[in-house]
Amino acid sequence: MQVIALGYVGVETKDTQRWISFAEEILGLRATETQDGTVLLRMDDRVYRIAVHPGNREGLAYLGWELPNAPALEQAAEELAQLGITFERDTDEECARRQVRGLLRFVDPAGSPLELFYGQQFNSVPFLPTRPVSGFVTGQLGIGHVVIRTPEAQAAADFYTNVLGFRISDYFADRFIFLHCNARHHSIAFGSMGPGRGLSHIMLEAKSLDDVGLTYDLVRERQIPIGMELGRHSNDWMYSFYMQSPSGFQIEYGYGGRLVDDATWTVTQLDRPSIWGHQWHELPVQAQA
Ligand SMILES: [Fe+2]
Image (cartoon, rainbow, N blue to C red):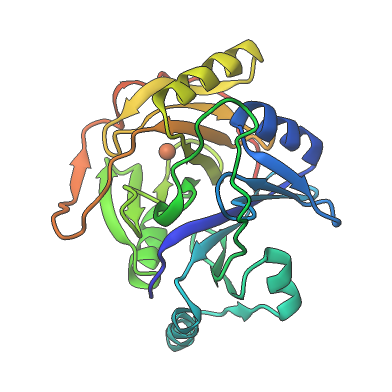
């Protein structure tokens, strides 16, 4: 299977208005509300990269993994069928709602609803961040990465490598497995750390280190809970900090991620997750289905 990027992420919230303020005033993402109350967050030349749906809980709704074209989606459907993995093929109406040309849906071993899609709607009006920041590193690298808490980390990683075609990037002790599907060091990681399960964080990569610093100052000024202070990760080399989103999971706001070349990449085990910083603060973990 030929997954090329994390194309979009869907979340569910009880308070879309709080998400609009958070996205536009803090993250620099541009929000548009659709007729059914869904808030689409734009960060580049796609119509959206994060979709915030009104609902009765807080947390991940789905991960949208991008395939390059229609034949790749057909091949993915064949492979899933051969492996006996139950999936649904979305109707034209459902594709229209996601603004894609084709869509398959199933659930991974960590319990995350997945969508394989191709042909997401493009927006040719240039993206302008809503705050004075320089924008986000996306394109072929996708929107960033997600980290999922699960006691089934190994089973989930096996599924992503064996079924979805991901490659292992590295490991941190028995607690984290990092995987890539393009040159971004990881598009997803599974961790068995701490209580709870579900979405731990979404990482967005800014185009400038100053964007991260300016956002950090703003987050402190607005007293938004910080899950991890500024620091630099030891595997993807990201300079980043983590803030709590209105749904409880965190947003890692980063800069300077390294790229992986599969021709030369060697899997390693990390001695620690960060080179410096990333001092951790206890935040209430929200129950996520
Ligand atoms: Fe991260």
